[in-house]
Image 1 (cartoon, rainbow, N blue to C red):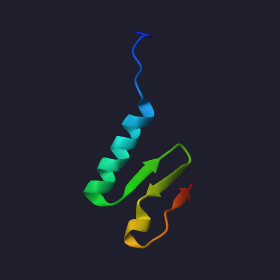
Image 2: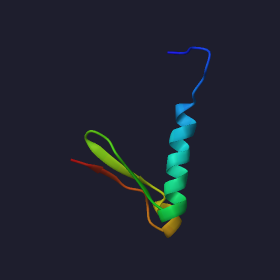
Image 3: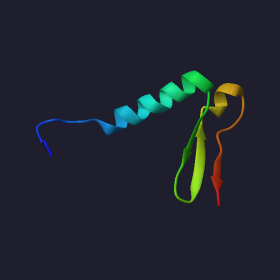
Image 4: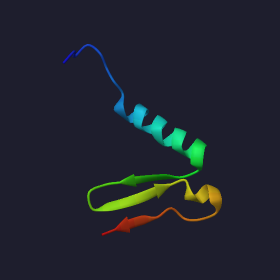
Length: 52
């Protein structure tokens, strides 16, 4: 691994979310035990967290 090169993973992740929001107005992230939405407030609804 080259240690002299910095790769900003957070910036790349934010770009993925931003692109999804521009295309569909909604982004859903799935984790191990839950999922959550980003962008629902743009359509007048609250963001959601779903467990189980």
